[in-house]
Amino acid sequence: MKPVTVITHPNIALIKYWGKRDEVLHLPTKSSLSVGLGSLATQTTIASTSELIDQIIINGETATPRIAQPILDFLTLFKNMYNINQAIAITTSNNFPTAAGLASSASGFAALAIALNTFFDLQLSRAKLSELARRGSGSACRSLFGGFVIWNQGKQTDGHDSIAEQLFTANHWPEFRIIVVVVSGEPKKISSRLAMQSSVNTSPFYAQWLKESEQRLLKMQKALAEKDFGTVGQLAEDDCLGMHKTMHTSQPSITFWSPATQVIMQSVIELRTKHNVPCYFTIDAGPNVKILCLDNNVSSILEYIKTIPDVSYCITSKIARDPQ
Ligand code: PMV
Image (tube, rainbow, N blue to C red; front, side):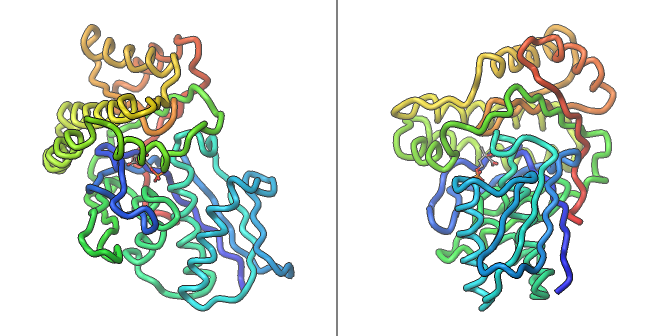
């Protein structure tokens, strides 16, 4: 069988997924909306192996059990579903830190689903691959597509309708940029799975966030269609802050922010309010910050942000195109 190589991109949610209605199937409590990060990429190759068990190499090294286990679980699920009985060699690499809140699991499982489909010539639709990738990690279902993507929460108990679809291609808004501000490349101390559970089960603000976030999702779709940057940015920032509030107010309290995260957030607000530079932040389950802006403001934002002592580096990204 011929080796297959796939390139996918992580995505950053502008309207977040945070909480599951089904822990096994990774069915969300609400729909979410993301944009793909074109400059961040996962490259995954699947090839035959003479070994009896699956081989997993990540970033040039044999995967540690903590990282390998979810991948092996996904492979077992996939192989059982399609009656596959063959060991494979998976080689995958990211051009950004793995498991540090930069959504490497999203691009990783999306790449794996696409590569398995091609390698075993299963001819599954992208909607079906989105459903499968979701089983690896919820947000992975959105990385099956470039551009702006909605993950419809779906209603069915088996999750067949809980899949992503593209709302706008990357060409819809060529000036849109996402600056990824990396403050730490360390793997996170608590998984998003556990942090999510804690928010759902213990935060007094979870129900409120859910309701407000659903309303923001509708407004976000309209603002994206109209390319209304100020509204897109404000909705994204509000949704992110609401999500993190549900973590901060859970029992015990959880935070993914480092002191540098908060300095960057404050700097973005200063840039916007004191220096009239339109920019907004969003943050996932990690300390790194993503700044949303338009191309003509990238250099002034970078100049300001790079002076913050704990900023390791910044990656300026255009909107991702479809996986290759
Ligand atoms: O897909 P997971 O289980 O890694 O969860 C991702 C959750 C957030 O990144 C914080 C939000 C989102 O919608 O991507």
